[in-house]
Image 1 (tube, one colour):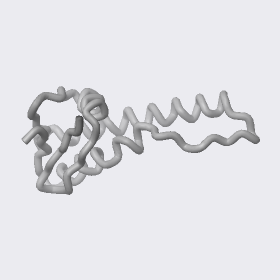
Image 2: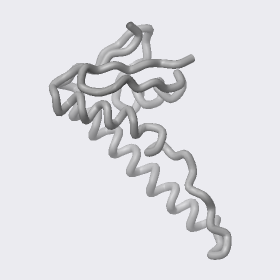
Image 3: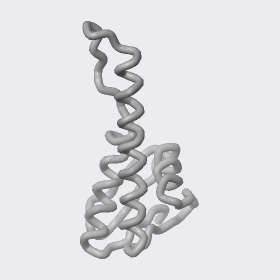
Length: 105
């Protein structure tokens, strides 16, 4: 199932329900039938998501260093930073314009 996030500050962001649920949990929200991230909550939410992305990227680099030989370079994966980027960008734009983010309408 797809979830569509909307804000007057940016284009819609559409993602799978599982990813939406995970990202919302990271910022302290629950995925309900409808929901909102108020503009005054966005700065804290952005910081929490950025922190999690940084922590995951560091852990991935450590694992890659342990498991890859010099001649066996692996392709970049589909990490959290890639999957969360459109949502994070929407939050940044909404925060900059004092707009809310809604879903389920």
